Every structure is written in structure tokens, then in C-alpha cells.
Image 1: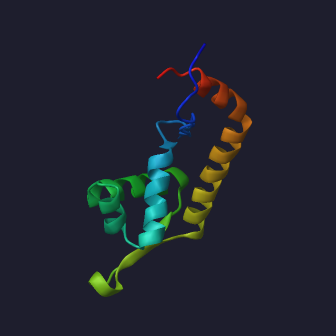
Image 2: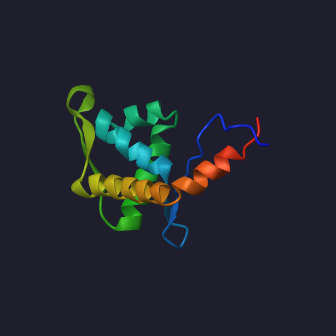
Length: 119
């Protein structure tokens, strides 16, 4: 008889939009942090990635959707920064909705699978 699972199974959602264009939890987490921190540099530090890597991911999102996910403000330490555009906010909300609905749809199957995990 299998032992009870000590953890719950979770999904990791990555959306393939064709032509090697993808969005997943990493890009969404970056956007979310930029929104919270109002800084690409601070969000990159929080995710332990370089500013350049963060900017490339943001630029990739802009190219995928043909519109900016955030705007930047030049002005140094006190006045510079970044904020999400309405589209950037919408993208996070859509991704969260897709993830939530997917998890809800397979909740019972995930629980059954987790119950089969040994150790």
C-alpha cells in the first residue's frame, strides 16, 4: 500500500505561442516583481539574474505581443524606474487565470498522482 504523499503535486504551466515564442512562470514572475519593485534592476536582483538578462526577457515579451509590457522612466536613483503597462498587468492576470483554471480542472488527478508518490 502506498504511503501518503508528504507534498501536493502542482502544475508548471508554460504556454507555447509558436515560432519559439513562449511565456511561463519565470517571465511572469519577472513582470510581477517589476510591478512590485518599480525597477527592472531590483526585480533582476530578486530573481538572481543580470539586468541584461531581465531586459532581454522583457524585450522578448514586447516582441511577442507587439506592444510594451512596461514603461521605463529615466532619472537616476530617485526618479528612474519602471512600471507595468495596462497590457503587462493584463498579461499577468491572464497567465494566472490560465494556471488557476488548469489546476482546478486536474485537481483530483494531481491529488491521486501525489498519493502514489513514495518517500
